[in-house]
Length: 130
Image 1: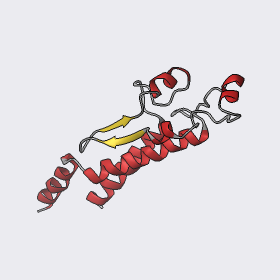
Image 2: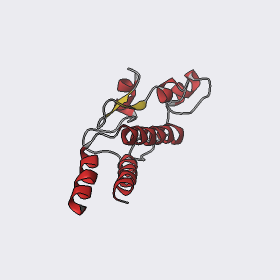
Image 3: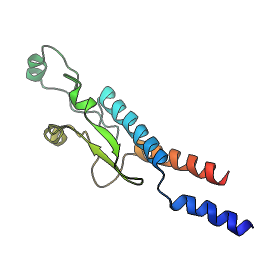
């Protein structure tokens, strides 16, 4: 009886969990929003200040990567399966990525994103195992 219940709970871990991946994507989107509002890359390092001529061109607006908010609004984590999240953004993010990192590098996820994954995964384990 115990073994059967344990096997049932373990099988729940192997099943893709859409609500879990949705919660992780939502948490990562909150982190992306914080990144743009704080003017820092995904690793918490501040973006380089705008050049004076750029501020003049933006009519005195010194906010970094927030001229129209289109880039911030268009950079989102989207669940594409029960186990995968894709970060999508506007094409112009490629230009900014070279000077002001917007998206994480392939080497490692930001600590804040790892924390979201750990928090939501722990929550699932608590729901399954009590």
